[in-house]
Structures are given as C-alpha cells and as structure tokens.
Length: 460
Ligand SMILES: Cc1ncc(COP(=O)(O)O)c(C=O)c1O
Image (cartoon, rainbow, N blue to C red; front, top):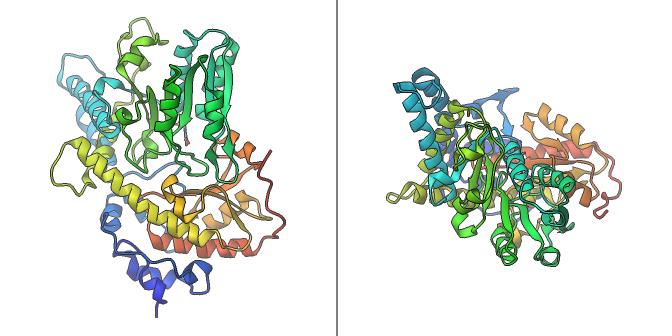
C-alpha cells in the first residue's frame, strides 16, 4: 500500500505506478508535509522519455538513473537519425558542384538557422561552429589578444568553469590584467558589488557563466551585461550549463558573444559560438589564409563535423516538438518548450532539495532556500561528511545511479569554498520524481556508512 505522499509522486503519469514500490516512508523527504505536487500541465515525461533510447538501459534489472547530466546529456532518437541520415545520404565535403556536397552546404545553413532560433540570434550568420566550447573560447581569446593593450582589464568570475577562465588568463602574457567578481560562499551566488567595484574604463571584456556547472546558480547575466556595457566592455557568456535548462535570448541579454555545447543540451559533441555581427567585424581571427574573413566562417577552423551538425538539427527539432503551442515561428516554439522545461525542472529542484538538505551527514552547497529556486537549475553539489565523494559516487553507481565526483573543472569556485571535490548530481527534463526518491534512498544508505565530522570549511 503506498504512503499518502507516495501516491502523488511523479508529474508524469507513468512513474506514479512504479514509484510507490521504491519509496520508504521513514525517509525525511517523504515525511515533509510541504511536498505536494500537482499533475504536470507542462509536458508529459513519459512521452519525453520515449525519444531517448538510452534511458531504457537497465542495471541489476532496474532502469539506470542518469544524474550525470551536467557532464553529458543523453540524446533523443532525432539525433541518432541525424547522424545516420547524413552518413547514409549526404556525406561529402562542402563547396562541390554535386548533390551530396550541395546538400551538406544546405545542412550547415539549416544548422545555423536552428541554432539562431534556439538562441534568439538576429541572423544565422551570427552562429559559428567548432569542436567544443573550450576550443571556440580559445579562438575568441586569441583574437582578443590581437587587440588588447597592456593594462587592459578582463573581468572574470570566481563561479566559472575553467573553460571560461583559462583562455582569458592566457592573455596575461600580453599584459592583460585580470579582475574577479567574487562569490558569496554560503549561497554560491555572484557578489554584484564586487563586480561593480571591479569594472572601469579599462575593462575590455567581461566573461561570465550563465549558470554554474558546480552549484546550479543562475547568474544575473542581463544585469551584468548592462553593467559592463556602461564601461564599453564586451560581454562573453558561457551558456554551456544553462542551455539545457531554460530559454536563451541573446538579443534580450544584449551580450556580444555567447558559447554553448550541444552535448550538454541533448545533442552531439560540438560547440556553438554566437557572435553579434558588429562584434565579429571588430575581430581579426586566427585562421588559414584561404578561410573567409567574414563571419560566421571566420571563426571556424578546418573541416567541421557535418554529421554532428545533422545531429544538432535533430536535437533542436526534438526540443521544438516539446512546445505545446499550436502556432508561431520555430523560435516561438523553442522559447515555449524551453520555458516549459524550466518550470518542470523547478519542481525537480524543489523535491530534490527538500529531500537532500535534511539527510543526516549530508552538506549541500549553493542555494537551498525554497523561495529562491528560480535562481538555480537542478544541479546540486554536496558532500557526505566523512566520506570521499569518489567513493560515494561509486557506491551509488553500484545501485545504478550515475553521479559525478571531483572538481567538475570548476576549479575557482571549489577553491573559493575551500573544497577539493564535491559530489554532483544534475537533473534535466527527462528525469522524474521517482528517480529522486530512489537516489535519496540510496544516498541515505551510502551516508549511513560514513563518519560525520565537522562540515568542511566554506571560505578560503
Ligand atoms: C559551464 C561549462 N562551461 C564550459 C564547459 C566546457 O565545454 P566543452 O566540453 O564543450 O569544451 C563545460 C563542460 O563541462 C561546462 O560545464
């Protein structure tokens, strides 16, 4: 007989039959009377999950729980079909006077147009592709290195992934001065006062993340962009972690450059650079002599992965299909779908944090206040006191629950909080409430075999 709360678990309809068997009434998150969930009016995760073949993988007779999404998301069938279709039908290099080559040219344009729709870019010509976010960011930093003067300042944040830090630190050799936006270690949120204090007429670039891949914090990037533009600085946004979780609108943000990675938003391994047209024109980019000096091509080195672009088109078509709107442009559908994802994920965050924070021996970092959940995505770092995160991750893996342990390449933020490593889980829209309950139950077991000394230091 399911517990009263177990009966209302799951926004999806499918999981509500399966969930009660996995739920234990003696866990704190089940006793929490504030956990009441309505039937989802957003979208049906049963339908969503049918798109993802890998979600059917089992271990020990039970479905695998993919909570490793900040490292890599699973892909829908549309992406797999995109790869197959490209290799079976259109495989060629570009610019040839024959069908498969022309089709490849068309595919690239289609991929740019799809990405422009996803990001709200003014035109597909503002979208360039590369191997991943890191290589595109180095491409931009090398180009910035050509115009930077000794003493020019670059403002970075202590909350960022190293891929939005190291490429800019490389410019110190050319005389750039690095300034930092600090964070509040208790909430892992940016300290805007330190941003205001660090900006000056010398600031050439602000490079900041849209959301933290370690703590899930959503940064006030529009506000920061305004602040930096007031000093004439360019703004570069790392949207890798935010892209799977909510709508992005580069024109509303008014940012100059923005990068993301398709494998983090249900697509293949490739990076995407948005560069506002006027900004691209201001840069002279390192490239071969025969390459076009005009955007979007100027940012792209060598031959692209056309099969991945075909997969990307499939990923964006999948996201568009989640829209419940009956009319509107492709952009409208994507905005609606990503807004629905954002809303659904907030309910995941709510249940996850309500269950995780009271667990004995577990310390959760970042925003945990239920009234502040609109400032985070469901990516959560925690430690079990007295237990190595890597060991905890491997014990959860034995139970078929995939999580991550380490510094997540978020070297600055972890250092700032005095942490060598955390355990991290990250949920996306194909995750379901009963998976959270299964995770919490397993984590309770894993935590019970740890010694619980004092919580780790939070300030360095
Ligand atoms: C927030 C963030 N930025 C940048 C990166 C680097 O992305 P890529 O692997 O595409 O270079 C990652 C990868 O984990 C990330 O999470």
